[in-house]
Image (cartoon, rainbow, N blue to C red; front, top):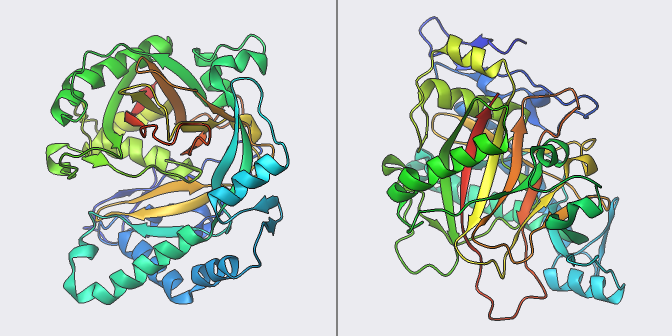
Length: 420
């Protein structure tokens, strides 16, 4: 299937861009619906596959397999649950006790702690909060069934013991590799940037767009000397203790303020959604908070025929003392299949990824990350020949060594594309 393939349900249908599934050389197929084919290929009269994905969602809800699996974990005897990758734990505290009882230690600057992974190797679905489905009074029973399904997915996850290394000391693991280099991003899918931002109020979405977005674009172009263009297309603010208005307002480019941290190993994009998200930004300016993009389909195809990447950048507002953001190095999971989660909007089907635990996963963090340090992680790379990292996966976690009264992480995360 070519990158320019268009699927239409009728002569009058709105064309839907169907990306090719571009697996990395040596990577096994994903755990996904439709053999990994994007739901865009099921477009019906311009619905971008959302109807087909919604139907698949409720088929899985009706099957009840997520509930059966979660109940099995809940009803297992006390103590560790043996998986084919090693012992997992239902509770953070249980896993932490296992780490301490077995004297699992980290190198200097590192940390031994529990990380939460998916266990069930099946694709999953979610209907995003902005979808009109949630406002349809005729579907209240379906909505409640879906909420139970999503709770069952969460119950089907376990904590596993891991060692975190200090990312500032990457050269101790990879001699000659500096964490603040493009080479580090190419090899590991993660790196460290620097920014002394002039943005004074990260809770003011308009100021973030006006001041911080250009700062991050400048950082990226300096970080990747071969890049020709970089743009920030949206951001999120994380602050559990924020007492102001958290309301999200997409129309006014305001993401609100997140009270929760994504405490599950995941990645924001995959082989399909990396290309889909890029093209819909270039050609439709869809859900873009930053510089407007108005490429024709031909111009977008030409731009995307060269290398492009999606990079997330996270900058603290104050030194991080709890709920740090941690990242996994590409070489340690490059041969592992990812598990697709389908996120259903009114006008598109996004794809994120989850992962199952492996004891050799290579995790990094930035202890006490400061406001001038910008952690950078790759969410997608169009290069598939195995010469560079395709992505990193990541999660938030709880630092067991932090004081009980340590404030939770306050930071801003921007999502970007970089073109070469």
